[in-house]
Image (tube, rainbow, N blue to C red; front, side, top):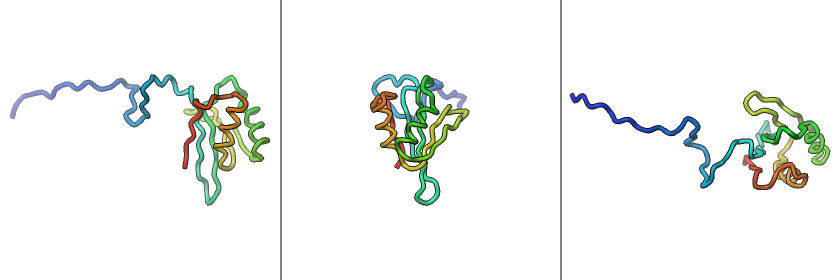
Length: 116
């Protein structure tokens, strides 16, 4: 038996996510992107969630406009980790992204579509 001690390995900073997306530039904070996701419910039913809108926008007014344009129902949910999240019935990912670009709430490069 030897009394050698294992060398110290430099670990990355606490904010490093090994499974996160890597880009060539500094990503900034997570508030830069609007995430539009679809979640499968039961059968053919699905739910679209929109998160990451800036706090200066009134979520209820945005929701009202989305519901009127897409003829669907929706709600604003307050989450402890994610903040305010807009939920819409059906797969409205493309419609929501076009609406956000058209109304200049968000730019196209700041919108991320997720889901199948």
